[in-house]
Image (cartoon, rainbow, N blue to C red; front, side, top):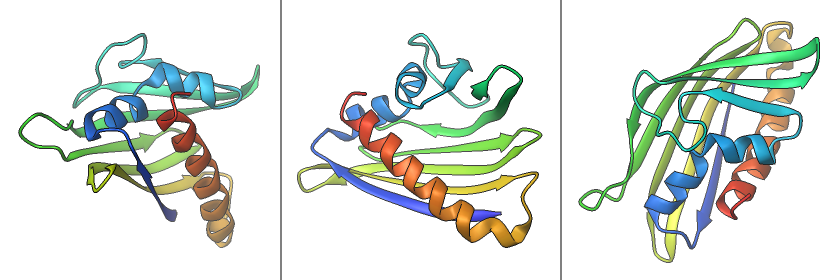
Length: 148
């Protein structure tokens, strides 16, 4: 399994940055050929135990990325730090997301750490998978934080 971390700063408040990175409808809008469905779509709030699936591809050439929320501590008035842990348990895509949002001098900082594995790839491909996934997630997170 490969591991990567994306760190971004934004002028958004921690609460707004959190809202944007966990808006699953926005993920559908900004990730090509991907549609998210399940808890947290259509404006519903995600929470511990929430499940969702990102289906990427066309027709029969699509892959389901099945995810379940294990921790979901959104920033609040008294605590401006947020942390979510999401487990990926699909047949093809496996891994874990550990996403954090915290206050920064001029807004907030987002740290997205992810373990990712694709069932058909050998472990020797992990370094390439890490680089490709990190670039893709950096692009998606930037778009989400800019409002899609």
